[in-house]
Image (cartoon, rainbow over all chains, first blue to last red; front, side, top):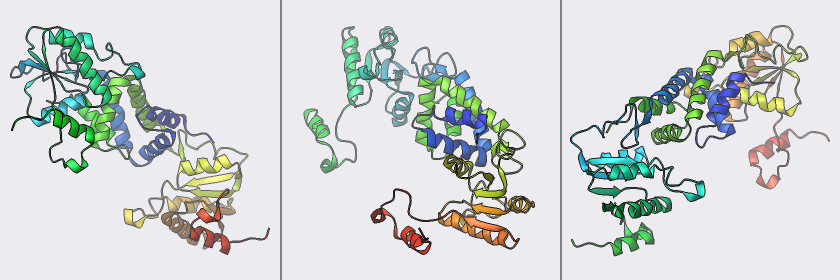
Length: 198
Length: 198
């Protein structure tokens, strides 16, 4: 018994989604064909449209449909501040805090030598050019606090400091609402070292 | 900060996939745009193509791109046997056992009153018409051995028996390779009741 070739093609294509194995792909393909053809058609259009229209902002490297993204063209932003994040999702999280009014640079990744991701892959030359445009006074490193994120921050920090820029990093410490009993020792150690006057 | 509208549309469309929530949808959308545009374009084409080309076989109700599926048009098949399964995936599993050479009817679901799935939704009238075509001598019920699958088998069995058809059900018992210690009591009870001469 052979399954229809367009169904095989769909199953194969679904495996390109992160975290979807062969069984899940088949299950999803059958589900969509049986119960949600409208959703399947919509997803098909959305993918085609996104591939055509989504590009990287020429200035901050985030996703946009235009030459420059909305944030970079917003004149009310503080152009002396540049926040470096790993992904557009991280950028969104920072925006939601309403505590930052500067501009961004989105690496679209992090240094990860084991995965073959070097400085070129996270657009470090573009970041240096962006940070040394004469307007930027302070670069805020907001990469993740994972090993790779920390290494990335360290690397960028060393590179930019030699160019006479003020480089800062998001504070580490006990999370808001955190109970010491349940916070890991590394975090508490960091919070102790970075303790500050009240 | 607003994300590009085609990226929002993609995130929304990805939520139509079974088991994908808002966070996963966003993560997948960003991943595809950043790391696998080729895969995204391919999946877009595959979905559009499948929605256009995949239909139900007029005879057995499985997925096919033609009026009748390959199995139904295979003259070497035993037309006196009709096996009833819930899904094309189940049909594929039975085919892989190489123990069945008859034809199929695919319900594309199971009776589930709580979810509002009644006899009409599993195409029971078509199954009856198919089973009483004069050729079929035996209907093999191969719905799942879940509560809903069993109820579906029971319902179909009652309906077809009143039409003078031989109706059988896949045997229940201890799985091949199963150790009694680790098999549930219900299965062992069933195997005991259905014990057979060696």
